[in-house]
Length: 280
Image 1 (cartoon, rainbow, N blue to C red):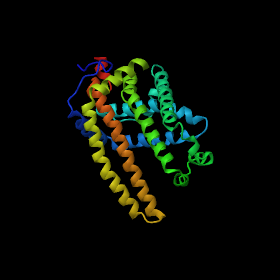
Image 2: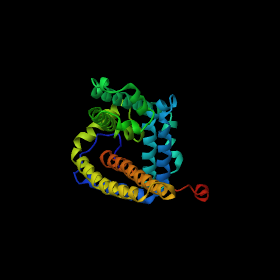
Image 3: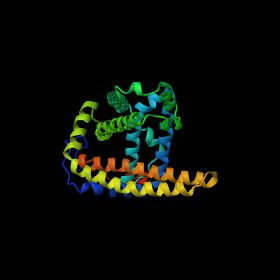
Image 4: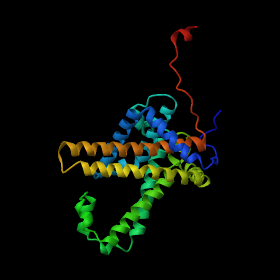
């Protein structure tokens, strides 16, 4: 019998980092079409985060959407077919939605704090009009940025994403699969990362090794796309699909790592009960 997913994390060998990667690819291959559709829907929803009012709600809903995607991998691991509605299942769960939204608010606040601290003192080097253009998504404004300011912005964003990702990596599945409270999930989740730093180090190396050829292929495809037209649109679509598959693989490794370290039960989907058997 598998241990409770909310129990104390166990320490696993370093080689499990590569195993999570292989398991994620295997799960993705089983239901690539359905998982890709769910991932595309999630990206479309996240694209609405630029809207003034609804954007903040979407940002704090990211942990809930992430839990939905992890649930899709769980259904796949049990031999089922993930439905697109699974993406919204955690956010519609009365027992879990509040904790996941609170997690989203916490991650957002921590991310903003990290970025603010790293960018403090450099506000004077940034033109307010230029910053407004950046906030509106003007790509050309990046070239006009001061190189030092640009470096600090990239570093601040990287640190903010790293801290937020570390806080939520195991916290989200512990809330959803383990029914943990937010504080308890944070503490146990961080402990699970710390005691298993070796497999996560190998996992990171494996992801880098896969990302390098992906970057080369994307660059080659872009160089072959020409200046525009149907070929350019087709090339961009292929690149977007490749990037989406890579992102789904990341979610898959998150699910596999959680399943390995916290022992979430994985068994076959139960077939529907037969009326004749019930009568018997």
